[in-house]
Length: 350
Image (cartoon, rainbow, N blue to C red; front, top):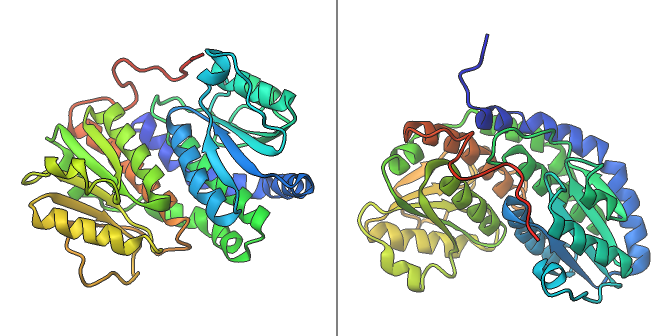
C-alpha cells in the first residue's frame, strides 16, 4: 500500500531511528578523534557549510564556544575560491558540513585547510564524497539518502553529531547520558499536535521565527523551510535583535513562531514574546513539556513538546516537531513540499 505522506514527512519520521544508529556507530569514532585532537591543542574551530548545513554550523558556534571553550567562526568559501587566498589554519579544527559533500567551494576550502595542516573533519552522508576525500577525519551522519529537496533528517543528524562531538571532547557525562535518550524523545515529537501553528500560518505571506542562543540556529532553519516549502516570507531573528528595527513590522495577527529552551536565555525570550503578544501578534511558543515557565509569559498558543532531556537538546526536539508540521502546512497551502519551485537537491557553488 502506498503511503499518503509526502517524502518530506516520511524522511522526517525516519530521523529517530537514524539518530539511534548514528549515536551507536559514531561513539568510538568521536572518542578517537577527540583524543587525537587534544594532542594538538587546537586554538579555534572554523566551519564550512551552506544552506541548512550552515544553520547547523551556527549551532556549532554556540556549542563549541560554550562546551569546549574554542572560538568558532564560519568560513567564507569565496575567500578561497573567488579571491584565491588561503588562511593560516594550522592550529585549528576545520569542520566541513554537507549532506552530499559535492559542492566545489566546500571541497576546495577544506582541501586547502588540510594542506595547511589543519585538523579537518567532514560531517557527511556520503563518506566517499569529495569533501570527505579532502578531510583528515570523516564522520558519517548515517541519515541515508534524502529525496525531498528540503533537508530534514540530515539536519537533525548533523546537530546530533555536533553535540556528540562536543560532549565527548568536554567529557560531559550529563550531556552524553541525555543523548542516549534522544531517539525516544524524537519519536515522541513525531505525534505532537501543532495544528494551531498550521492554522496561524496557512494564509499568511510573512512571519517571524525567533530563538536565542542554541535556539537561534533552529529559527534560521525553520524560516528557511517555510520559504522553501510554503512560500512564506519568514525571517529568523535572535530575540535580542528583533526588538530593534524588525519590531516595527509587528501588526495585529502577525504570526511569530518562538523556540525557547530551558537555559539562561529563557527570560529574555519570554519577555519578547509577552511584548509581541500584547501588541496583537499571533505568538506560537514552543517549550519543553512540564518545565516551569516565568509567570510573565503571555502567548497566543503553546505548542506541544516532550519533556526536556537537556537544554542543548531542546532545540533539536523542536526542529523535529517543526518539520512534520511544515510538511502538512505546505499541503494545506496547496503546495508540494517535496518539489519546491526553482530549487534542486544539490547546489553547486564556487
